[in-house]
Amino acid sequence: MKPYQRYRRLDDAVHQTRMDALLALLDKVLERLDKAETALRAGNTTAAVPEIAKAQLIVVALASGVRAHVNTEINMTILRLYEFAVRHLTTPSLEGIATARTAIRTLRNGFEPLRTEANELERAGTIPALDRLQMVLATA
Image 1 (cartoon, rainbow, N blue to C red):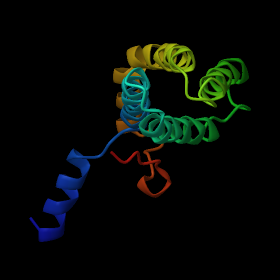
Image 2: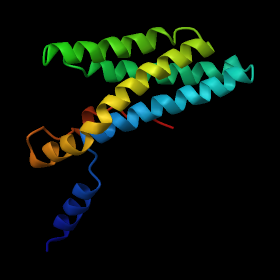
Image 3: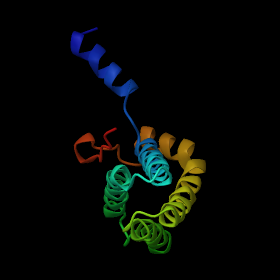
């Protein structure tokens, strides 16, 4: 085996699929909302605002990747849920966070059952692999 082949196989083993990336980003949004809620409950709006802003940024980035002209009805519903979540995060409030969390959980719960099939389709080449250069990265 040539040395570069070993690294290629290693790279393939750690490749993240589109669906795994999407679910991880939705989880990150929920994590940010939990942190913001904890801060607001403690009366610390200053700590809540950056968490809310980062959650909004992830949601807006995900929304920008939705191709509304493909499977219009479903994708427009997804866009509406993203927009709904972002709109409710415009001011730091417990009610807004709870409402946004419901929308994000609805999306996540809708995508989760598709995970196995989507990953298989991507690995088989039916769905193009995720280009890491175009991937949205959520930093901790």
